[in-house]
Length: 60
Image 1 (tube, rainbow, N blue to C red):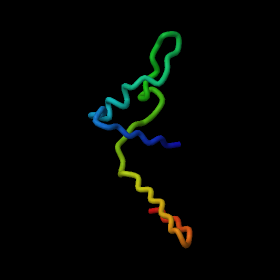
Image 2 (image 1 turned 45 degrees about the vertical axis):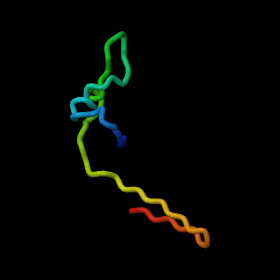
Image 3 (image 1 turned 120 degrees about the horizontal axis):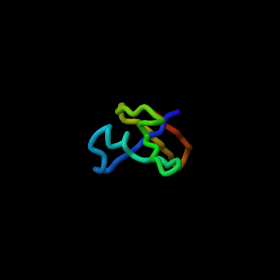
Image 4 (image 1 turned 90 degrees about the horizontal axis):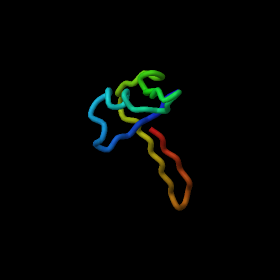
């Protein structure tokens, strides 16, 4: 399973994501790094196109 995270200037490094708290258990924080592997990958491209005459869908 993958989750895509988009940060608008708040994330400076992978460690910023890894050290984000997801929840807590008995007042102990559970960090993303405790439950997931974090890496930076290529940008995901999604394109949706429609035409008034004929419906189209373009995905790349």
